[in-house]
Length: 514
Ligand code: GLN
Image (cartoon, rainbow, N blue to C red; front, side):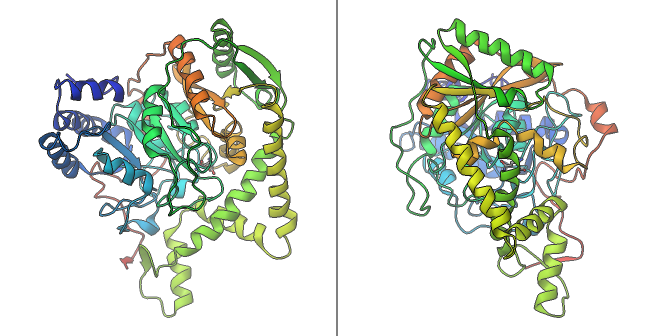
């Protein structure tokens, strides 16, 4: 009765309200789907099946008292948002057993609305990566072709939605980690304006760039989820009062909308199939009454290098707290405290995290601070000004979300620079703090292509409306087959250790839990 591959949250809500399905039945449909396909997809680090079943029954029983707009709808949460009483690992062995004592504000708001949490999804360790291959526990597979990556770092959330293992999900986006996996998995993903959603309880990667946002099956669902997580939070000084409430989008036309296509993005090595789908979507915008013009964001080529100074610099400071004393894993049998720190961090962090900590520490060191970090911050200002200038001429900017479709597992794993380039089209919006959304705009070689809108700060409603109109006109209805398993077996790109219950989340070698 519940087709988890196609059902949207809006439809699920209607089924619940009409009494066609109970929250317990709805939740069970997702848990059954997880049980059926999770050993192939590895979208989750932990499935909280018992809690989900119990809580959904409670919502059904107390429906009168719990009649919030999202009550009884199941959701998946990226495992870098802390959840009281449910382990939060950031897909890192250093936090393999970390049990938070509080809950991230965005998640708390959903829990207060009686949303049912299905589990915690896989990611690149501490959200550093673009393929979910950097997880310390398992490589998530793209449901469209199990031999390819789902993108990252919110690859678990994106794959869970695409594979029908979640109705919708939360992700986080520091340089593209919601939008790029949304694009590669054929779902909708949005990074809100910096400050719109509280970062309290989001384990910090790069604090000036991180934002939590929705991964959903439709733009309407994206707005529905977003409106319930936004708002000022006294626990996050960078959070703001939303200037206007998030509206549920209804636009079908784009009359008068001016859309800028930055020529620098199209020069950035976009593969032909992606470019073709993007150009078809641009033609459709014109048919809907919008006007597309070429614009220039001249500092685009410096955005990626500036990001890869700023993000590692902030990460090196943020990750200093993982020292074996306060959280998670502690190396056993160290003779003194310095050895304990060194071994804990040496054994607990994976290679990409270590690379970022080293780059960041170097960039912030006394002799080099101005040359690297100071200069990167000035470039960031130029990138932001490019957008300010362009938004004097156009209402929105549009580009492909990712230069390529999903790539094979392992293809970029040994080449960090090739991996970093996955985010050329998404990083500028983070540097400028702007809202950006990706919707599926067709297939290339059987794999989804993402279309990105970027808007001025706090223009969420405009972005959502435009995306809704385009989504309706595109009519993308394809669903993944979970095929390509042979390819998945022959190209296995990492430890496939996670089980649907997360029990196999492996501890670092010879570790003791602190
Ligand atoms: N892929 C980018 C990185 O590795 C962005 C990650 C993110 O948005 N969390 O830093």
